[in-house]
Image (tube, rainbow, N blue to C red; front, side):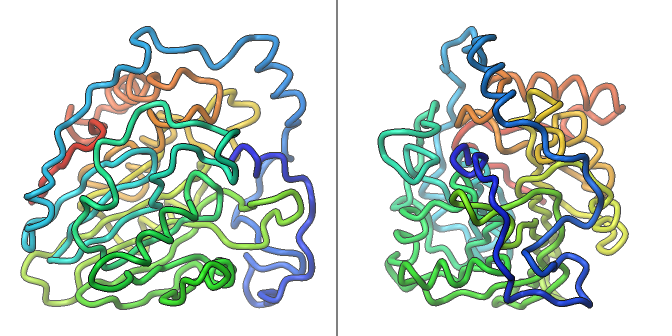
Length: 344
């Protein structure tokens, strides 16, 4: 992501341009709702150097770690569950199907092995320990959300590759690394995968993997629901990576409510620079309310230093924001790395 943030180029003429689609322009994709102009990257980087941020947490990254329930996860075919692996990577088990969000198992969120944001909290569950993955959903192509090594390993998993669901424009990148079991989707598109209905929905963000490809591929979130007639109806909203916008009210109106939402809570400081692309915990609570989630889990924190807040700060501010909003104590919380939450 840090490399992508350097991107200042404009997208070339887009093959996805459609005058009837407001998110598709001749030069690439755009958000649904107006944003403030992009703030100065150079100013932000200078502030980071002169102010010495981000500050290390007092506990020196010794986060509480869960003991992953590997055997249960591998055998579970009936219970709905979510396991937070790290960052925006979560394993969802719904109606006997295994779905993973933005799989990121590498040591750095970078195209390079020697530079870029380095994992601060070690993984305590590996790709090899996962049950067979049926579906992979990708929110966008930033390096902390679309990791080449991770998707390549998933594509080679025993028992055959999963289906990769990706935003418009990412299918070509997948094909370039030999991954062909891919469906790409526009906002509000729906596809059926086995027992699940999966929808791609808007978010306020952007995309890039290099210096000159900003917004050439789409970004967004995912709605995953059990199909009609499921014995245990269940619905999940995965917000991906996003700033706050009216998109979430639109999603709430369209889908009604969700049993579970996975909402980012980190990489928000300084607000003058990050506000358009990353929500803070208070805005995450607004998303929770906008989409009418019965239960939300905070993601996108505690793994990589991508912004200026201490890496352990987001859950503390989330607790304050949830209390301020009058939410019940366990309605919007976080999980430990590797922790599984079994859901009714």
